[in-house]
Image (cartoon, rainbow, N blue to C red):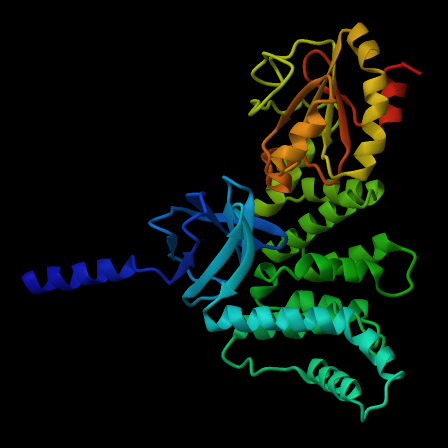
Length: 427
């Protein structure tokens, strides 16, 4: 009996061993203590775990197998590091200036190779065409001409041995096939992309390629009927499968981002009408859109660093009309739009209305300097597009506007400041 118990205890211990470990070394001057680890599903980061710094490093155990893109996010200073997993140990260290990450050294072989490949890919797309043109003006026997020719050959033929790295191979092969910019390549077809989407393994969802490949599909060919092209793809990938639903979710968000409202509405309705079991990704897309449709009750939000009010949340603000603005100090459209709201702010107050603005800034100094000029209620998590409000309120661009009634129901979703002013009859 003792032997059996001993064997079982060993099995129990082994079952809890990590699939792989991530070791991250930081300078002693780097102050953030907490880090979040994310995996990827399509274009969405999925929280895997959290870890607290010990000494000057973090060691994160990943319990389940995972191959694909990953991200470390330091919420205390809104910094992040992107890397990959080949389901093997990862090791990196970084340098900082004033708590900002300025240089990352990828020490494990897979990430070192991936970093090299991405560097070469960028140079091939943006530098190699220019080098070809410059070559025409120099004799190949000159020192500069020889160096130039060597660089052209290096970038043109740079293909390291990737046999040990399934994910790097997958990413590099399919990026080159579907997304690389090259005048010599034949245009990609709808049929080729559909074939890829239906036959690709699970690395498609974890590779960051899914959304740009879908955009490539929308831009491929000469068909003027985008809806028919999308219907054809969705029928083949089958929206009753997890992959089909993830693709449907991605498409709804693409149409939303690019202001293609008719297409967004069509495929959101299709998603709502599905009778099969719906995966978590599509469920969230549906819920976020339903919660921010006209007629819905605007989800409440507890303020984080609010100014110009003693209210603790959106619902605590008492007003007949609430104008909600999502903006950022780095947004050029916001620079043009916000002064128009400032000009009408007293008139909005005269209607027993209030303006509540949420910034998607991540730089505290830039935010504080700008917010001094804004007379209404202001708040920000200072996490940029990692802010919770961007997901909760389905924000795809800034500025974005909502108008609420006294019961916090959404009564309008204007596109511009002028539309806000017109809706409130303040022209």
